[in-house]
Each structure stands twice: as structure tokens, then as C-alpha cells.
Amino acid sequence: MIVKNVINEELLTIPEAKELLDRIKEERAEEVEGLGYELKKAIRHIDAFSKSDAKKSRALVTDLMELEKMKPEIAIRIADILPETRDELRSIYAKERFILTTEDLDRMLDLVADVA
Image (cartoon, rainbow, N blue to C red; front, side):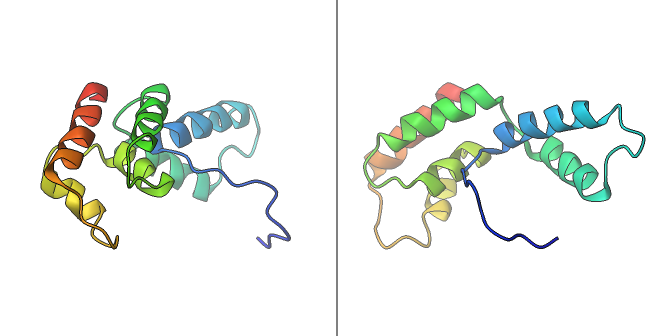
């Protein structure tokens, strides 16, 4: 498939993507051809890794974005993974050029615990 230009781009959490794919699945269920291979594979992947619902994950991303040293990509990743320990959070931040304090990590873990 050749894409000529990108009209819109938006970062989604896995639960939000699951919600979108479920909607597409319902729309295409009535078609004769059914779902394509790629769509079936994407739905299977999303079902395996979705840990919460779309509203909770978006609320977590919104709360995380209010913190210092937070980028949208990292907030989405945290909402997808729902880390439970400081080490898991540190691994998410491994490529960043700054180090988080224990207080920052604990604040993030508290936000994640509220969702889980």
C-alpha cells in the first residue's frame, strides 16, 4: 500500500486502539470478504496486550502529562505497560538524557496504581 500523504496523526494507547479496531471489526463483520489478514493479526495482538479500558488509559496519559520531564510518547508507553516497580519505569526512561528522582518515580507509580 502506497501512502501519498499523511492527513492526521495521533498517539493512541493500546486500549484506545483496541476500541477503534473493535469498531472496525463490527463494521466489516457484515461484509462478504470479512476481515483481512493484517486486521485479524492486529486485533489478536491488541487483545493480548490491552490491560485496561480506553477512558482509564487516556485519563492516565492526561495525568502523566502534568508531571515534569514527561513526553507524550513516554506517557503513552507507561499507560500501555502499566509498570509496577521503579525499575520498570527506569527502563522506559533508559534512552532519555535525564535521571528521574525517587519522588518522580513514586508519583508516576501512584498514578498507575490508581488506574490498575
